[in-house]
Image 1: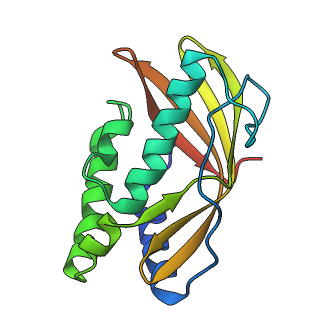
Image 2 (image 1 turned 120 degrees about the vertical axis):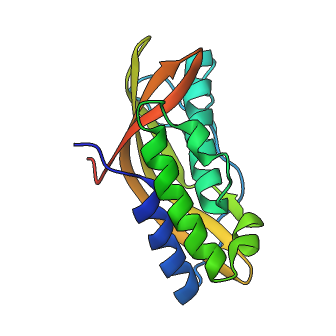
Length: 169
């Protein structure tokens, strides 16, 4: 069963961020390692596909937190329209509250996330993302817990997000 990513995640973040701040984590993050291994501060993959998969996930988290108009670009064409509609609805809600520019200036720290390749082949990648990341929308700082399996598909030479399955362990 596919789940829409943008509406629940963004609206949940908005609600949390307007309520209470959380401590900021150290800056930095690293890409996916070999299949079955988690990344850490000391490891980086030398596999170009792993780096590309990591980059699309990093872009997803950063663009979602900052309500970047390019967020739909990280999704597979198979789900892009649905995700774009959900994103636009969430962004419009923030804009109506007069908060869009604050979110656009948000700082995102992904260093608390761990990426583990569950499967990696030329036609599909499953990547488990766990841990937490922070986003700072001055004066608030919010820590967001993540536990999801992302399914990525290659399209026109780039990896794109097809599905996110929350609570996957």
